[in-house]
Length: 251
Ligand SMILES: Nc1nc2c(ncn2[C@@H]2O[C@H](COP(=O)(O)OP(=O)(O)OP(=O)(O)O)[C@@H](O)[C@H]2O)c(=O)[nH]1
Ligand SMILES: [Mg+2]
Image (tube, rainbow, N blue to C red; front, side):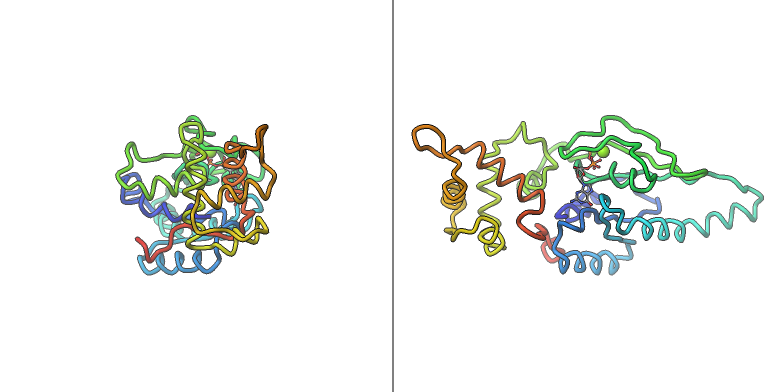
């Protein structure tokens, strides 16, 4: 979804992909705004980067990734053959921020659950080679983040999409910040979801949603923790509709 937005920044932050052939995979396309995904594809293509949107959970786009990888490697394989080196395994590394679906993608390629997946960041703990077929292996890696965030907007966006562990964040504030952004950019989608007219202020909207959903505890107060969790879970689960947080024009 909103995920691929950040990938570009990662590329500039790490040197892992230097001099390596690479494909940018835009996963969770089912959650993203189609027009913005298209804008990202155009943006990457204009920068001569191979890019493909996929839905790892349904397998959509997986074949396309394989085809692009094979095209990229064909030249290399031909060269090997000419030199009499028939068998050299293809090894590729899957790199990305936490919780974007790296392991799910690998499982979709293998056709079985080889790598552990889960709807929180930090599921993959160590590196793991997964054999796709003879001569083709992928390295599943734990998601990576910057050691330190200079840009708080990026950190917020990562937190919204669930790439930063919720345990270390104030979920209530996070949900309010998400509403603040959402009310500016896609208010109609949030109002549609909660079937209520919302004010422009994140905290006021938070309270309105809590009341509408009956999230009240003894004494008539709002159950802020549950409200926050519901707002975050529903956004991340695509219940607000197809949303992309970052656009190419902003980078
Ligand atoms: N909607 C949607 N969910 C997806 C898709 N791909 C993966 N997911 C879900 O996203 C969550 C994270 O998937 P993982 O494959 O564990 O992500 P990861 O990138 O390996 O995460 P770490 O190992 O923690 O870095 C899981 O709940 C998946 O089911 C997709 O294409 N669409
Ligand atoms: Mg993983």
